[in-house]
Image (cartoon, rainbow, N blue to C red; front, side, top):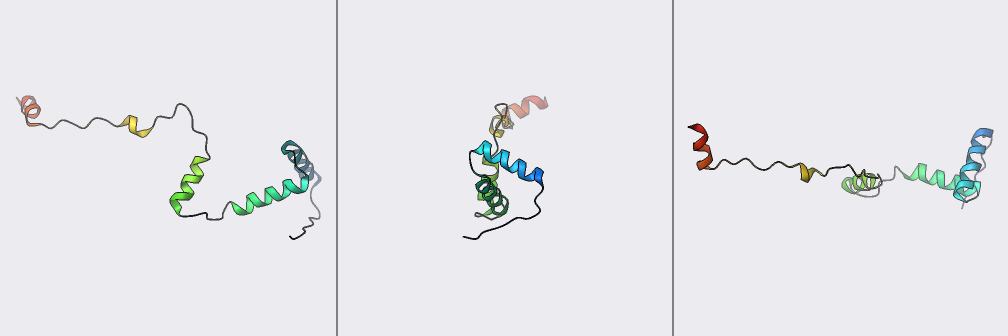
Length: 89
């Protein structure tokens, strides 16, 4: 494993890192590792395009008001001879 030293880090960034690490119950060093891992690995292609799209949208919370497209499908029009000939008279 490598060691990384970051010089000239803003005090405000260090403070925010310390608070975020405390909220997650980890050290500042571990929080920095997780942030770097997340930032650098999110562009990694984890499979075919369809799989990546599924992974992206499965992470999003769906609303209870969401109406599936299948419930919005209209019934097919009736073009039977009997009904069609009645309307033309």
